Structures are given as C-alpha cells and as structure tokens.
Length: 472
Image 1 (cartoon, rainbow, N blue to C red):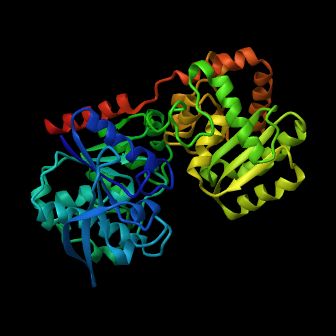
Image 2: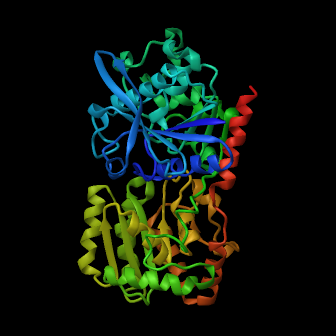
C-alpha cells in the first residue's frame, strides 16, 4: 500500500512531544512490512532542515481568502529516516524556529493541508491511505470528501489518529473563506459548539479513528474537552492501538548518545556508569537512588505539583535520595523548580530546556522516572524507561495504565491512582524501600528490559486497519 502520514511533527525533523516520536517511527516499520509509507510535514527552520539536502519535486500556488502563497514540495534526498520525507515549504508561514504558538497558526496549518492536497491532485496521485495526525491535518478528511478541487481523491480512505484530544485547532467562522470551495450543504461537518473545530471535523469525516492506546479511547469518550458525545457517537469506527517505540533508536547497547553502553547481561554496571557521569555533571551523589522527571512542565503532565513533591520528598529523605528534573514549559513552574537548587544542593538539580542527548542519558542513568500525568494518551517515556532499566512511577491513566503494572501486583513499576502530591510522595516512599531491596529491584529491572514495546506489532495493527478500509 501507498500511505501518507500528514503531521505537524516528526522526529528528528521537528519535535515538541510524543507525536514526533510516533510519526518518526511508525512509517519506518510499515515500510519494513513491505509498504510504501511516507511523511508530509511543514518545512520549519530547524536544525534538521538546515543540515540536510532537499530537492523540489513540485511547486504551485494556493489561495486562502485574500491571501496567496507560493509553495514547494521538497523531498529529503537520501531517505535516511527509513521513509520518504516530504516537506511543504511556504517560507512566509513556516520559515520560523518554533512549531506552534504563533498568532497565525490557523492560517499556517490550513495552508499546509491545502498545499498537500493540491500537490496530490496536480500530480494525479492516488494513494491508498491518508493517515492524518491530530488537528493539524484534521480538515483533510473533510476536503477530500466535499472539496470541489479534490474530487479525484474522494475514494481515498482517510484515517485520523488522535494523539492528544485536548488540542483541537478551533477557529471562528469569519475565517471560513480560507477553506477551499466546498459543498456548502456539508458545512455542519465543520462546526462544533458554534466554531470550526478541525479535530471534530476529522472525527466526523475520517473513515476510521484511532487513538494511541486502548485506555485513552475509553477516557476521551468521557472527557475530551467538549467532544465526548461526538466520540461516543463515532465509537463504532474507532479503535485504540498502543504506540510502540523505535527500538533501533532506543537501544542501550548501541545508543550513540549514551555515556556508557550496556545490555541485559551487564545492565547494573552500565547503568551505574551512566548514573555516575550524570551525578558528576549535576552535583548529585551516585550512591543514592536517582529520581527524575523528563518532559513538558505543564498541567497535563502533573508538573505543577513537582516543586511541592520535590520539597516534601527531599525533606523526608534528606540524605537518601537525588532528584533531577529535565524539562521546560510553564515559566512559574520553571522558576519554582530553579529556586529549590540552592536549598537542596547536592541532592537536587534541574535542567530547564530540551536536550535529546541528555534525555537519553537520564533514562539510562536514573533509577526511577516520575510520570504523575493528569492526561497521558499513550506515553512513550515510560517505555523508554523500561527499556533502559529505569523503573517508572506512574499514575494509572491512558497508556500508562496499559503499559505499567505495579510491582506489588507482580509487575515492574510503581502505580498510583491520582495526580496528587500525597499519591506521588507515597510512591516515592515505596520506591526508596524497593531500592533498599537490591535483589528485588534488580529482578524488576531485568523483567522490564525484556518487555517488547517495539513498533512491529503496532505497525501491523495499523496496516490491518488500512486493509479493512480497502474493502469498503
């Protein structure tokens, strides 16, 4: 099959969160199954786009209301990512360092979708599947069904994959003229709660809806920022497929980013070597258990509770634990975390920002990973941690519930039910006691490193979904 993945993010081209990791891995594994899976992404001004070579395979013009843009479709020359990568180049809109949070995001991602569809039509392509990821590609299922310019694509099945249902891309009807001409009798497919909602539109119009874990599909049928009833109505065409991780990238034996390599046979020695280097770099004591948090410092991740959690844990265990935080997000949370450094010097540190190499080394060197998420559609961090022998401490929600079993129930992690300071600090207490029982702790880590969370199975499940649509 010929499959296009249309997304706002793809690792290592442009990354904010887990969406990038999925789109950077799933197509590669689908290609290994014998298909032609490709990725289409806006061309941002990122390190990847600056350092790699692209060739223009198509150029054209598009109109959005009174605005006109020229665009190019540029292909990465080497296919070094394991799939064909196509970038939509619209310098006026995307030649910027950040992916999101611009005032004209509505125009940016709408132009991206229109340019992609224009390219398909103008080059007379007939792909087998259009897999649209989150709201940034959410109007494509509508346009291929009802857009006058895209009638030739009407029979192409569309799949919406929801990575995070909280972000929906809302915009007012005063911008409806930005959308290419369509059958106005179908305008209701665009509307939800009196605004144009691209995610709602995609849920209505896509042939199939997937979420990134089975539990997340259950959860957003109850709580989805206003779309609960819609998703319940469309539940018959929806399925949860648990994400995988790229086991070529996340391999402690070959990971070029690590201070020290290791495998299952020598993981204690290897993890200790990485831990010692981390602790040296961040003024921590490598003889103590190292707790970490890696991710966005936002409410969804429970990060607003981290300053209080850290302070309570460090007061309770002043000589027994280390904590290292890696992330960025809410400025107030960043400031509160920074303010703890002096008071708990030698036991606590924080790195504000995004650093992929450091993240890999923290997974390899830490003993425990904190994930007190309020919302976690799938979660990849816990899978990275398990693969590198780091024990995740998670709230039972979304994909965390699907992938981590408490060691008290015969599993390999530490689980709690609420995103609360008391639940997390109690879990830290359990972790401290587990760490003291080194034989039990090593047994748990041995088990976790052998769990198969590769993309092989998930990629096959997506292919099964696509093939079921071919027969409709």
